[in-house]
Image (cartoon, rainbow, N blue to C red; front, side, top):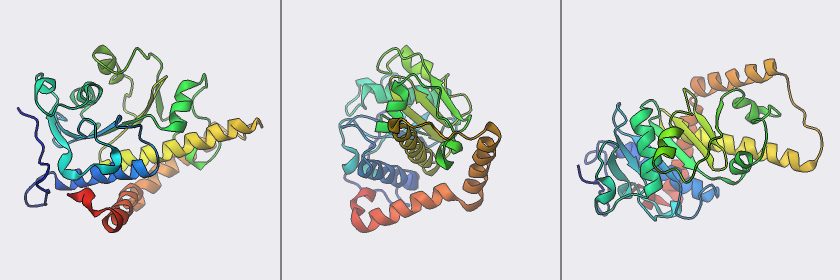
Length: 258
């Protein structure tokens, strides 16, 4: 299978069966750049277009998040051992980490891996997770997996190992590295990423005051986390979040859809 990209031929609902997923991903890239969550031309988002997870969209090598268009996203096969030998090959760490995730964790349809400021600070300090000190931190109470076996830049065995750390969760705090969020849709994975970074920002900022933290009890934290889950499902919060991002980009940066 060759690497598939339809750049310079704008996707449409009629021409591309993955049109909506391409546009959703492009919107997530653009918005992440606006929020300063990206890092240079590194970091990657992917979405599996089939239930097995083997075929997935991902950003091409060397493109800044703020410029990515729907047509530029590569369509790769996680089982194609010749991918990195082909013209237009993706970033090696992207292929290693996201290829492994889509081979080994098909439930993780969308995978977002970044090194955002506050989540990466949390990944870099000797702290016992993310304590429940506000509604956003409580959203993730007992729901963040920790990888504390950093062994390099996510290539080869390191990438395969990472796929065993997530379990059934949606957020993986990658010690000495960054964060990974997953979801059944681009909207869910991005919403997890957005709120996790906000939660980490609150926690790190609170630590910086030097004042004691106002940590709630486990029962209240768990109740709030379940309320979050019910709220997201009942009102379609994640879909609404991404829909508003797309609406803003439609007005201000419509080329993201091209």
